[in-house]
Structure formats: C-alpha cells, structure tokens
Image 1 (tube, rainbow, N blue to C red):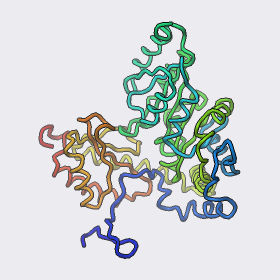
Image 2: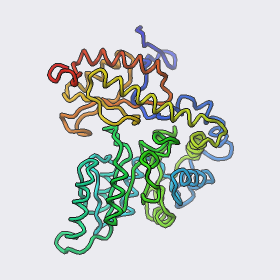
Image 3: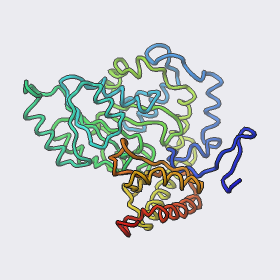
Image 4: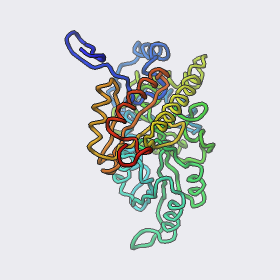
Length: 394
C-alpha cells in the first residue's frame, strides 16, 4: 500500500491521482452537487434518460429547444442545433454543408473530426499553414482565379475551417485576420470552438469575445458541451436558414439518437451559471479561476526550462517530449507520483513531435497545481526534458 493506494467496490484496488488530463475546464464535474444537481435530477421527474429516437422523428423534447435557444443567445447567432456527440458534430455537419464542386480550405492542424467531415463531403480540400493568413490568402486567390481543376468553372462554395483553440498546441486562432481575409474574398467561415467556448473571454463566450470579432462575421459556429459544460454532445450555431437546412440534411439530426434530456438539463444549468442567470457570480469566478490557473501553470512550466507550446490564457498546456521513447516513460513516472496525464504521439502528432498535454481546470486549487508542478519537475529531471536549458541533455 503506497501513498496513492485506494479501494473501490470492496476489494478492487485503484490509484488516487490528480487529474491533469480530462476536459473539465470550468470545474462543473467537481461542484456538480452545488451548481447543477437540482435541475438535472429534477429533469428525470418528467422526462426519460433517452428519447430513443432521432431529432427528425420523436427525439425532440422541450429541453432540446431550451438548449438550442440558450446556445444561440450565448453565441450571438439566430438559431442553433444540438447534436448528441461532439466528434459527429463536425463529421456530419460539414458533409451537409459542402459537396462536389465546393472547396474546403482547412488549417493544417485542424482536428480529425474536421478532416473526416471534409473528406466525407466530397469537396476539394486545400490546407493552409497553421495560422498563416498570408498563405490562406494565396490559396483563396488561386482558387478564385483558376477555379476547379480541368473545367476551370468557379467553385460553388468556398469554406475556410479553423479552430478557436487548437487542442494539441494550446494556441489561439488568429481569428481577426482570418475573418478579414475571408470577407475580402467572399469565403464562408466555419469556426470550431470545442475548446474555447466557455473557457476564454471575459464572460466565457469564446474566441470571438477574446479576439473582439463580431459573431455575425462568422457563418458557422461549432462547439461541444464536454469541455466547459460538464455534459456531452455538441452544437452548431448559425442563421435560421442554415440551421433549418441542417435539421433536414445533417445525419446527426436525421439518423442519430437525440441528446439525452438529462444531458440537455446539465448543459442548460451550466450555461445559466456561466451567464449569471442563477443569481450568483459562480460563473464569473470559474472563468477567472481557469484563466489564473492556466497562466500560473504555464509560467511555472516555462520556468522549469520545458518547451511549452501555446498561448497564455489557454487552458491547454502541452510540453514537448520529442523522443517517442519518452512518451510512455513520462506517463508512467507521472502515474507513479499520483498524476493522471495525457501523452500524445504518432499518428496524432508527427513522429518526432511527441508531447504531454495538461488540461487545467477551474476546479484545481493552487495547492493542487503546486504539488503537480513539483512532481513534474522530478520527472523532467529524470527524463532529461528541460530542452530550453540544455538541448542535448534536458
């Protein structure tokens, strides 16, 4: 029996760890009994756990409408559609919007759900260098001047797809300049806010609020309920015409089981906390705590001499391991010290760009972070990964 020994369900042995791997940006998984329990448990009095049907058939309840209404209001769009899985939000929405004769221009570091959706759509695909608006402009110019291959006919639609925060880099999108370029050349903008909605901006309204971009300048806004809202699923927020089209044509609406009413209520309750509609300032405190924790943790990692990716104010703090052999070693050594961490290697990253990714939460206390940083420093010395201080020996 060691320091982190624990038991569950009688004789089952487990290890108690500080969670630095899961998405729980605003800490709703920690204080659920205080913030969301009453509403969520109350929803079970009138609605089942599952609607047992797709949205197009019998899978829509009042709570589904309420979720979509509050999402549209929060995002500054006319309407919204809730989907039962975050990955499928991209994978099924993009093919419903784009098709043969259309062009998708995607940031080279976009999530695999975007890649899958783009490939499934049948559209032509071009990638621009990460956050490089000059390269994006070159591709747009060429696409407009040359048109489609062989026929040289104009593209039906051109859509640029970017993310608010890139999940493996912890970097913010250069949204202001990307919007400027897209408006100049008449391209649509699809923004994936899976990691930024709720987690960035003074009131948690995501990358648009953080960068000062008008929501009406973004055509399609996508996000998930897993990272900041303690739920599951995702959403698309846009104009009424676009949402009505997606309700008819998107596979997630036509064929997939609808979002659980219980999860709908969880999402509604967390949105109300964030927006202050619960009559408290808990939401504001959570957003402030997340930003302060993220910046403190990132600063301390940099002070250790680790190669830290990303920007300040981002809740994702990746550190570079580089050597593939250090992936399992870093995870194992952290686990021994009571830290649950996420390590990433090929094919999620290039083979020599292995990394560990820390996800910071408003639920972490400063004491939690100090303990974690002390142990990470031990592991950094053991594995020799202080590359900012010594390139060859860490």
